[in-house]
Length: 64
Image (cartoon, one colour):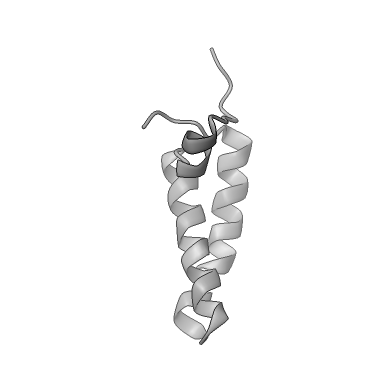
């Protein structure tokens, strides 16, 4: 899969992911699900690859 997440999009994903990921460890119930979503945001922000963007053909990455 090619990179499809731009710099601003990546930064926002990392910030929100870092805020949500601790919920996985410190909460129960729905908080755990939100924490898993936070981990997914961190991974997609760091790798600049988003599976949903791939499926829908979207991209926020600027072309050279």
